[in-house]
Length: 134
Image: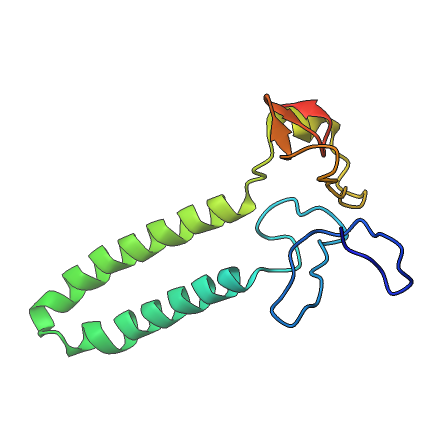
């Protein structure tokens, strides 16, 4: 169990960085992928998407022979547009179970899991953080 500087036990997660710092959970539950704070992978995926689309439409396609340019713009534009729409849909969906959505108040702080009481968050299809059957 983790202890505070005064020697009292604290209810913080057990994730510890290499430097020994304790990683605290976000204070308020995230509703979807658009909720702040953003994860570093989200920033990387958007940067890769913008970089690939800029390179494809600004460098690679203009270097093709003139007869292939328009077909390539249409096909590649369709693929990039489809990916963008699917990426936005996946980011904006709330992944919570329907029972959790009905009972969860997203303005409340994130509950902290106590491993002394339960070995796993979800056991026998019951979530011990949300207190609902999933």
